[in-house]
Length: 302
Ligand code: CP
Ligand code: NVA
Image (cartoon, rainbow, N blue to C red; front, side, top):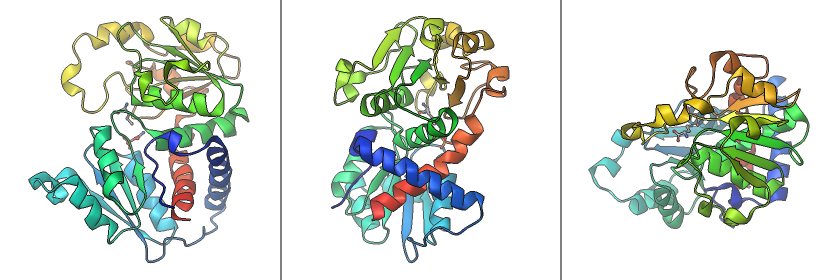
């Protein structure tokens, strides 16, 4: 059966747990320089990206290489999409030659259109609504650093953006507590979640300190996502009290970790001494993109 991965809800909780276990095995193979199964020999994946990327492109291209396959990257200027060929036609053509398609789209509807017309799995490598691949890596990082995901407290501090919504999906699916602290007017659109606002795992506050109190994880993201470049307006003033500083981290649990999907803007959403400090796990989190996505590729190609 053809499966897509447009949002975390495309996987069941048990499938996410199994996928994270497999990601840990694949990471161990990589660390000990053992080859992983060559499941992509004579297979290819295409990356159809409307927006910039470092980690997502890198991790999928390297994953394809590790599996013995290849990856083809298309920026908007590299395909006939720019000249008006439809997403539907593009999805059909790609499906006839590659085995997986990773999209990065301004509108989530575009990712859905790929899924509607493709006959191979579509992976959402970020849309305006969700960033599920990042959450797989983030959950793997929590599992490694905290030893568990269930019954943890995660404090999201900052913009209620695509990352925040995807953390909310993860909390609802896997049963951890998410406290969201955003400035007034920047709450996430939780209607994007199947269970919407009803999830008991999700709480809101206007205080970053309240959110962080005794938390296991403090997480933030840029105050201005890709595609919002012309919406800066009053954001810097509104978000300034929401910077993750050492004093916010001091409210968190004694062994709390700091996470960020990157790229990070030091002195804006996070103080430099937090991002570069002892509690920050952002570099492992970024590397985990590779291992989590390798497990995802195996799952979807199986
Ligand atoms: N976190 C993340 O998706 O990074 P890139 O935008 O560099 O791919
Ligand atoms: N919220 C950010 C995440 C970047 C990885 C964006 O959409 O630009």
